[in-house]
Image (cartoon, rainbow over all chains, first blue to last red; front, side):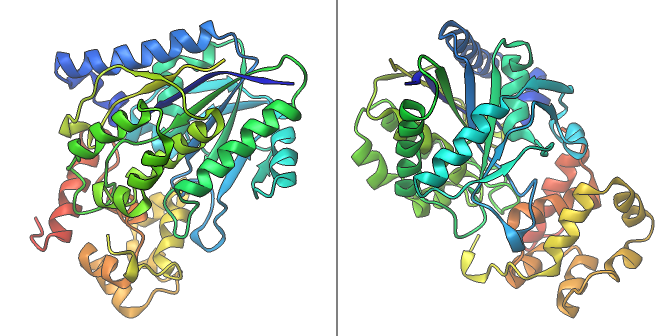
Length: 282
Length: 100
């Protein structure tokens, strides 16, 4: 019987890396404090594996055949994909994978009526995995990572209630399918409000973001699901904000838990609201 | 973005994906854009919009905005804080009907 030992949500806006050095000190403080806290507590939880849910951003598949989930189950994961290096201004990295857990997740989700695709070869990573990896130096961590790249932007995509169901299935999988005493960390990577490629490219919906963070800490998932619908997320930033659905999966897996946030910034040059949450689990 | 106009069948989507995944195609696109566009089954008005850098028209035809943003980077630049800023500025200006 495996157990969830860590759960968090973080943004992965590329400018958090590329423009970090140009940000005002108060913005830098919030970003650094958030990633530092997540990294520190993640390591302290001594996981055997970290499963990261993150928007695929049309990085691996054509629109004409677009999967809702891709489990990346290679022995190691290298990134960022070459075209995204300049975009993110990000160093190269190689993180350990965990093929056994990746394949088990594929079997487990299939048995629980959640269709996921499995890839055992190299997949492309953009800011989705690259930003949390370099900001938290996950390539130096002692555990392997299983990225699950999610369709958060190609309609129709799994909405909030469906992502909660997926999260519950993930929890069930961890509890019933993984080896006894396996310690699993969960991370949702994405958000907050942003509209990549849209007319509101430079806009951040601070009111939405602050409400989102409040709801993540409220231990009231019914209200979160009622308020944070896909149309509401689209209104806060079309084609981008909905990648918060990766956080929905984590919240669905852990249930209503107290959490902690480490400040918020809507600095416009990030072109994305920034705030992170760690939930108490175990 | 009005998803009511979204058209997943647009050939522009494949163009952007191929440019993203193929470094040599990117170089060829930069050297001779028309020759690369010839390879794709673009609607006449879709091709005209790409050539005119008219992203409002492309989106009205149904282009996915995430890939629209990436097309802008293939045209104007991709590096953080430099070409990417110009690409974003020009994209937003086009969408707002005030091209730079």
